[in-house]
Length: 422
Image (cartoon, rainbow, N blue to C red; front, top):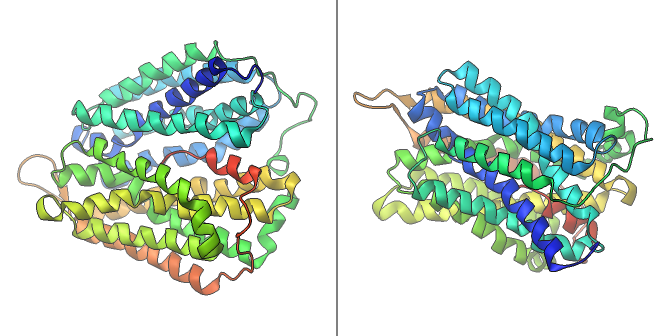
């Protein structure tokens, strides 16, 4: 690390903590606030939650056009977080869907590029990212956890206060960015940016390999029911009567950290197909547990569904990132990862936001008193069924001799370390 001191590591770790605290503070409880606070419909909530998917689709173009070519990364980060703070604060003042959605969409377009920018800034300060990045990046997950515990313990889940809190921290993050080390652009003379430059033909050509194409399609399919969890779990837990739901949901991030440590051990025993099937199976099981779980004697089912997040996320998405890293040439690994992220976190989750919202709205039950409730059992069973379809297609069609028994490459370690702690 340039100036490899405890001070530099602390500065980068603080950056990661603030970066993911902001996201964790407002996104997890968004559905509860929109339904209970603003009385929006399921479809409207799904679209609002899917704003981050739109941001994920646009982020690669923004990063390639602006941050990599024209400006110091810390100044771009500062500008995005400062403007984002204002936009998110204004979103918290809205009472109609049109205003909320427009501002959340604008905010997502501002925030999502900062995920890649914080990673690239950190990498630029390291001599050996495969050893140095993990301990710094884990502070991002810690930020997400602290945000959830704070929002839950203060009882803010059905209010606009989490968005206001995130806006305040975003403003603080903007100021903090000026204390970060200089990170000038490296590609000033790279020419005009284009989709072909971000996802070059050679990277897209890996989809011509049947196993990779099947993996990409299965990843797209699993991201559709995945959005049921991200968009509606907090609302579901609150309607079920679970106290401090946001705090309890942080158990998923603790589980994710634990499962990350076990990935090399499982690779040697299950291989890539076994790992991917285990991850997809965990989504089916999680939704089944949610369908029949509840408070009281059935609370352990909800707890298990939350704690399965480590297997759901790490075994499928982290394994998939490593698989793509192994299939792409060294020169095209970053582009290939970007392509898969675009397909999954972008297109897949955008479709999932629409589908989950439509299903939740269909099963909305008008209440005689207070806010309407939902028939959650069929909602989660539909999500489980969609996950099972993706699992079945993948299990039947995916065949690859790649066992993944060799050590995880440094590039793969960096790739999965950069993902968000969802």
